[in-house]
Length: 394
Image (cartoon, rainbow, N blue to C red; front, side, top):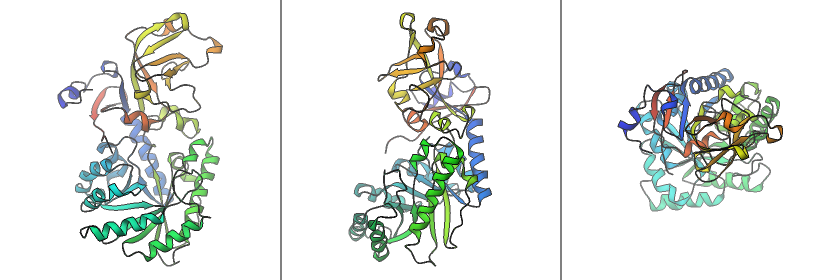
């Protein structure tokens, strides 16, 4: 896609129907509403908030999430994201970035360089990380004298981290405490399994379990040591107002979440948000129609949509006529069909024609957005008012 300023600017002031396809469409009113709600919720709870920038990977959305500097810390999944937020440090609304993957050798040099511009916090969950950091500091005198680290706790998602019952967690804390180049900042967990919850009660139970686990982990440190415990996911963020946590006096609780500005069909499936709270849609176009099999071809396949799933059948849902969805995809091809073909409700040739623009809801906004090089940002009337260029690469 041509992302030159001249080309992008030519779409400003035009309706969504005039955009090229496939394109990511962001509703700014919905984005702002979602962001403001969570900002109010964490303020009401009196806890910290650390937005994760990995969903839309853009300066504009990150600025909105920081809420004018009310929240001054982020989580990033890539080095590119940390580089991308540096203008916000100069604006005076951002102080700190957590690199949210357990640290590895090739990341240390760029992270050390970035630490000259923004406070960097690392993630560790293995005693080999301690040796890695000590070796790097020995070989690189200009590296930070001490690395602040979150120790990753596994609360049941089993992607990264250590269970609180594991002797390895106790050993890691001891080694970190003894290391001359490591300072334990706190304990961090991500309950990705919260995406499987289907009610506010279930999501709140997962959130409470997260808090219990990181508080238990924090007890491995002296009781007079201030420590940050960081919990969250977007489903957890939607129910943070239900959290009733009695914390030790030395423990500071913060929430982290990333998908919440957008939401998507996975979030709708939890029952915690409505379809109208989805800020991201994908504009695609009908390339052909096949009445004999009651299907149509669109120009948005796996690369434009992903193959993520939710409780909604297929790989995408037609916004204006939800009898229809993307029932299968290949690389650049998507097939529109009835979501429930057994009902036989609807004829493809009566609903779609070649050249017709079609808006889709996606299952996982983070992955869908990652495939696109520009976001067209619309007002409440679906008129393009801005175009945002996301950060790409790792």
